[in-house]
Length: 108
Image 1 (cartoon, helix red, strand yellow):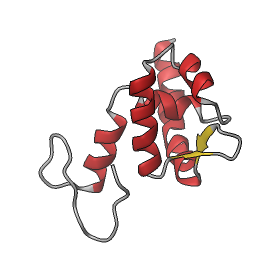
Image 2: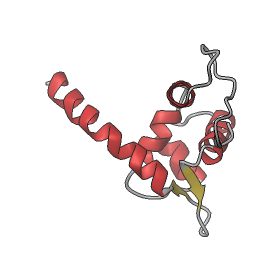
Image 3: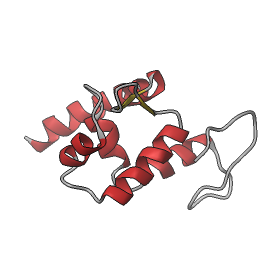
């Protein structure tokens, strides 16, 4: 998924409009997308480390999601070969923290 520029729209599963919120929810709703972002929230990880953190997710699916998240501007490949969050990716993860705290309270 390429980063959206200007007022152009893109095809989004389940939406004819391509509105930014629909595009974001489409991307985040794909298998392993949220988990990848969550596992990268504290530190960069190599592909192998990320696969381990993601309960041995399929390498093919993991690489597909990493590519999508990189194209969307949330994840970047660092100089050391590990994947990490971009500033935009960190901002996105911060928006999940209130939901995370709520889920922890709800679970108990």
